[in-house]
Image (cartoon, rainbow, N blue to C red; front, side, top):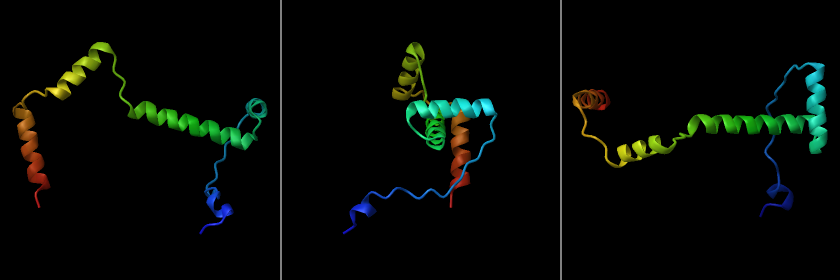
Length: 99
C-alpha cells in the first residue's frame, strides 16, 4: 500500500523554460506575483499554462452563431447525397487504403 507521501507526490519537474525580459516587464510580473501571493516562477508558469490552454481551446472548438449553427446542424442531420467529385474521391481513397 502506498504511503501518504507517495500518494501526494507531485510529478517531477524535469523541463526548464527561460525567457529574457526587460527590467520593466520583470517588475510588472513580480508585482503581479506578489499580489497573487505566489513566486515569480509560479506566476509565470500558471499564466503560461492558462494562455496555452485557452489558445488550444480557441483553435480546437468550433464556434457557430445563429444561422450558421442551424445550417451546420441541418447538414449533419440531413447530409446531401454525394456528388460525382465526392464519389470519385471515395474511390481513390479506397484504392489507396486497400491492403
